[in-house]
Length: 181
Image (cartoon, rainbow, N blue to C red; front, side, top):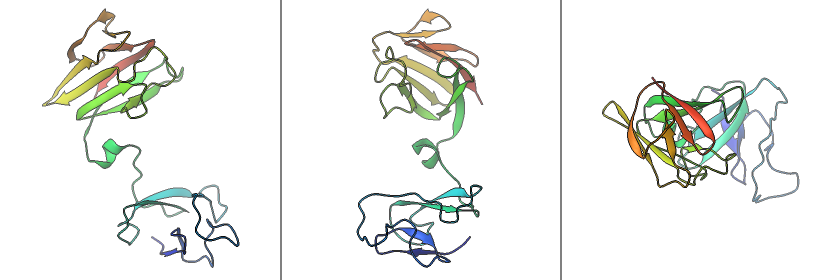
């Protein structure tokens, strides 16, 4: 892994560069972040490091461009917190080619709110917090969160119960297929 420098604005960049590629010329103390590919190579991979992995004690995430991506890239807070992957929801309603959503041990909230674990933003019939799927001690449970349009499991209106592999779940006008690991 290559070494990194820190500019006066707090940007990390590869130490083989003479100046920070993220800072505009003739300007200091930037308020906005710019992500740039300093090498110009389209095959470079984005690297995401926590503050400690980048060699400092900052509690910030730094994004580097480079061909030596050695650190794992995490896509959600569940992955970063160490929750185990236990299943998926797959929808062909959201995307005709299929869209999959990971389910982790513990609570998984489905809804239109950006704070939900599984966000259904293109269906106005999905409530803000529509459905909770809970995985505990090897069992998947679901509970409708008093949604406006209800939750249907295998085409039956249900407020709560257990899920089994292959069940269909309908929230609003969006249909998911439930799959376990």
